[in-house]
Picture 1 (tube, rainbow, N blue to C red):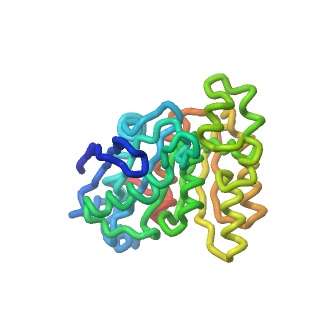
Picture 2 (cartoon, rainbow, N blue to C red):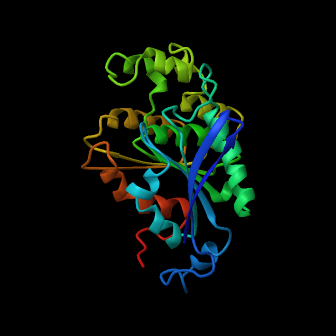
Amino acid sequence: MSVVHMEYYSDALQGRARFNAILPDFESAPNWVRGTPYEENYRRLPRVMVMLHGYTGGESDVLLQTGMHELAGKYNLCVIAPAGGNFFYVDCPWSGGKYATFVAEELTGLFRRTFRIEATAENTVISGWSMGGYGAVYLGWKYPDVFSKIIAFSPALLTKNLEAWIPSDHDRNEAYYRMIFGDIASAGQRDVNPEVLAREMKARNRPVPPVYIACGQEDFLLGNNLEFVEFMKEQQISHEFHTGPGVHSLAFWNQYMEDAVQWAVGAPRGARP
């Protein structure tokens, strides 16, 4: 397995962009795969997973704070972890940073060309936690031709009712949210609200990529996540929701990391080496 760090000039960001990538050894399947019905699927094309960090995080979080380096080799998974700043992975109308374009168009294309990964939407998953969980749902539904599945750990789905979050938010103020999402009052009616994207796909009879969510029972975003799960039930969008004791932290999300990967790649659930 290899770990690669890359920097390049990004047209989307109009500046330097960084990402880390985990590349498994494609030559041989691990012991637990051999002789199982999953082996043929494992040996097809390698899966690609874009993994988005949370607020104040960075591209090294995937390497340092998750077990994805082990899971990448175990499930034939290429992991791309970009540096997304604190911009919620959207094309920011006032700052000029096109973070959605950067991740979903520029970065995925660059990765496939550079490492000659013949990945299609069927083989490409987007995931993330907190702010990155929002980014995963948002980009997964905004770019269904790029991503086929979504993993979101405690996604910060704030845009449906963005005004309600600002008075109690000590780190970010109204100017910050306006820089990222534009007009705050109308954010819930625009496509920065993933529910708007899902309804648009439904109206065009397009399949909506399924979602895997895990959120702790003591997480301050639990109510927000439960509302989103109810929306998916109402819209008949395929999803899984998992919860258990835990707060808004990687300590909780890491408990579900392997199960989420198994769900994403179609591996037997609960498989072990």
